[in-house]
Image (cartoon, one colour):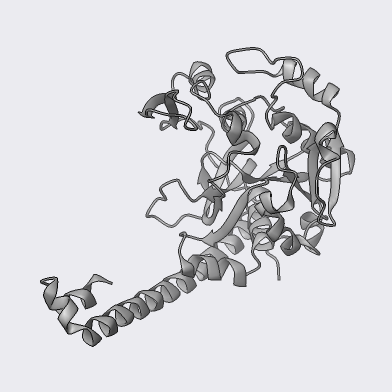
Length: 348
């Protein structure tokens, strides 16, 4: 049973933005799309027309947008240090804008924006327990339901799950202001912000919602955790360079900072520049507009937290028992390492 009224869930159009990954095995998000069937509208892949001819299908619609339109849109909404080159790299933001327009044309009130390389869903933490709980409760379908319910019950215009590589807070919260990245729900229709790019388009978009005079804001739901495939050099990642975060810092110097942490970017010898958003970056606070629905979401989050806590403790006990069993069955090895078997039992 969903938290969100059925008519509101079916009014969400799930869209996977893709480019430069023609083979289905490269687009790991595909494995989660079946979770959305019967919950939201049918998922759609959004791809530029020149790329679509080589795209391997999975049975879902592939909606294409013209290269000419993308170039015109990009030129008018460009934020990088150097202007776009004719026929060159445009990034994902024209696709994100097209996804919103597609949803609006089809009468949907929101779009579930997904990157094409999501490879894991968890609840609370990226652990075996977190993964099992997310899968048991519906996977991407559950993520869509919770994000929709939080959006409908607050002033959130852009409400996202929590990227697993970001350090989570210790305090359990249903939702808070923050920066959604690659898995988020966005309201469409009047008041929607247009997309800018080519780099850090998601961060810029959250600034647009959370830093303006309008009542909406950008939110994250820390209980919903996702991870992205991070080894390939395809898609957007192939174009990352040392200038990637500079424009972001120039646009928002009061809250966005950059720094060099490693000597190489993509193994090509250029400095690797990282960005960080400080406190107060999202200025518009979260406001609960439907206390009944938000309370229902909170109850579900608390229930998931209790389930996660119990399952995580069981996993720890099982791991401790396995280590203790190995230690007791090989006492000579433990003694040669100068460690008592009981020491191994405590490490779990």
